[in-house]
Amino acid sequence: MAIMIDELNLLEIFKDLGKICKTEHSCGCCAEKACLVGYARNGAAECRIAKRTGLPNGFENIPPSDIRGGYDEYDVLHAIAHLLLQCRNCKEEHYDNCLINVVRSCLEVIEFGEEKEYRGNVINYLMDIAQYDPTKADIIKEEYMLHKEK
Image (cartoon, rainbow, N blue to C red; front, side, top):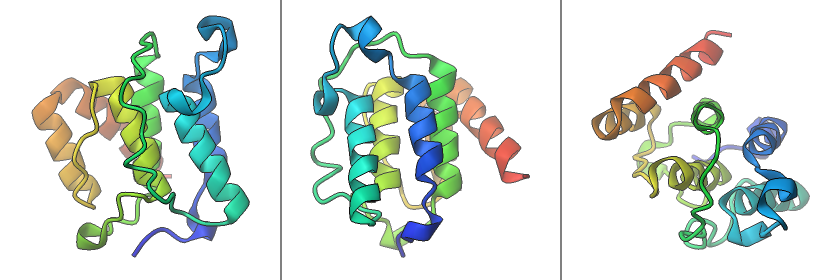
């Protein structure tokens, strides 16, 4: 049960990715799809134009070698929390190529150096991240709970 297009808050995704992007001023020139932020942004734009919530082969094509570094940790972790708020908690019906999953996975590569397993449930995800890095899991959880209550 994937997220429906009218439930997808693309504005929030673009806003968060805009905060994270180091811009051409810092990078020299935009690497677009070779950059994790650019890849996520491009995928969100593709979904907006096509009015869909999934990216064919989106998860498989995440650029693994983008190691620019220097991203703001809190912006990345808060963006992950904001994506979790949009997650439908599909559990067994989790779809790897869902835009939410693809963007979150890109941010995980930035923050953790690799994609983390997502078992289709926010609570399980937070518990898994806490096993890997309790401090970062707490930051994600705090931001998630702050906005969940609104």
